[in-house]
Amino acid sequence: MLFRDRMDAGRQLGQRLAHLRGLDVVVVGLTRGGIPVAYQVARALGAPLDVILVRKLGVPFQPELAMGAIAEGDVRVINPETRLMADIGPDELAAVEARERLELDRRIRRFRGARPRVPLAGRTVVVVDDGIATGATASAACQAARAAGATRIVLAAPVAPPDRIGWLRRDADEVVCLHTPDRFFAIGTFYTDFTQTSDDEVTDLLRRAAVLAPQAPTAAPAAPAGTHETHETHGAATPGATPNPPGREVEVDIPAVPVRLTGQLTVPEKAGGLVVFAHGSGSSRHSPRNRYVADVLGAAGLATLLFDLLTPAEEIDRANVFDIGLLAHRLVDVTGWLRGQPGVSHLPVGYFGASTGAAAALWAAAEPGSRIAAVVSRGGRPDLAASKLAAVAAPTLLVVGEHDDLVIDLNRQAQARLRCENRLTVVPRATHLFAEPGALETVAALARDWFVHHLTLVTHRG
Image 1 (spheres, rainbow, N blue to C red):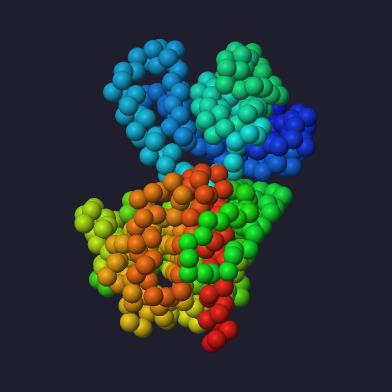
Image 2 (cartoon, rainbow, N blue to C red; image 1 turned 30 degrees about the vertical axis):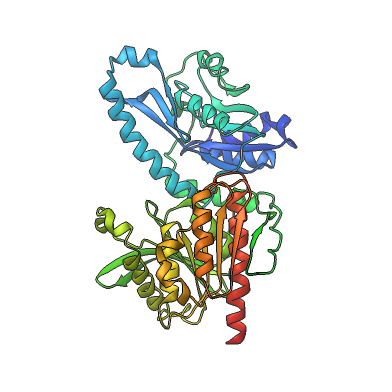
């Protein structure tokens, strides 16, 4: 045996990669077994750690034999030799890919959650696995990293067959492997302990790595709220350095007549307010964009609730997804439930709405007796609540992307109907989903400053 376990392999691999220490490096591990190895490599290099999501496309009658792989960013790698040898036709390949893509999406939600990907553009990316057999998953991971803008890719593994090293140099600028034995049967034969890595272990190591990683600069304060449109840029936290606020995080079942809804309530110590998220059509409480914003708010001392406005059965009927009145009343019912819950009942409440969820948030804030302290709309459709806007009393921040032309116009028209304190902020170079580098961080900083300011005012008045 060459390695006691994956952690031991990672420590040895980290020593071999010492020449990268001090460079602008990001370490990415393949799930699940590559994460313990990558964790030790990241520690050795003093580099941030992220997960890179890849799924092997196994031969149907021998799943451990890879005929290809898929990865984040719509990367697809097929090994034609294995596929020909196994006599796998197009329909069989498509069926395997469809099944694995569902699992890939599940793992993205499970392992990354609220955390955006650590930015790879312009950086050296070290792709780490616990071993290489066919090389299909490693190849897909390297291609995914390249597609994300990595300028140099180092593929690192404790063990691999020698004939795969040259093949993988097509995708990686450097391949580092501790051992390349001629007699290669299975990766696990080179480990004393090759116990399967669990989902919980992966998330725990990613959480621990985030705590140990160097902290990114904090966001610059937002300009004072006004009543006119502004074009602003904010210094914001680097993606991947998502704050990890202390406090308790619980899954909750929320009674909302006539159904029960599911959500995630996070309450930092000494919370100064509570922000309820209303997601847009086609999204859910697992939206990585909303979860990232929720983490930023949590680090600022605000409790957050992310929940699904509809049950899975209700979402099947697309009319429900765009029934703003229904969604708004669900939001009102959930807010009423929160105000009866110990530990949060005393907190001033704000709404963060995205896309159609922003219309539901504004509609709910306009309801008599709502007592909502602030509203933030991200790429919202406030026009869908046009008849209610004049009744909104909560200070409202509308955030749109510079290149989201139609939505900018709709927000300008909606702003003219608002009678409350409000501001329209246009994020430079951003599109509707704020997927551009730095755009989502700007949204999070704007929302944080708006909520902290207005929810704190309510607390002080109280």
